Image (cartoon, rainbow, N blue to C red; front, side):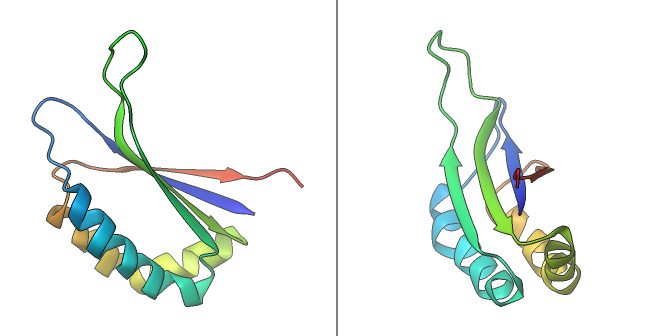
Length: 103
């Protein structure tokens, strides 16, 4: 299994529209990538640390695919539309990380 993490760094003045992300972007992602192998997604909102330090990421979204090939095919076909939607809810540059779940 492949887990793709889309992480949205925070910082002073960083804009992230949680309502748009939840109500528009994520449904679009599910509609486009669901038939292409997206098996599960989980959106997590960053919290400040117990000592009050700000979270490094406003939001981290985990997306599960059966393989890197499935993710690559989905991204190749619909990536431009999904990545082009980012300015509608976020004014920074997200980071992507890829993880393999142990067998």
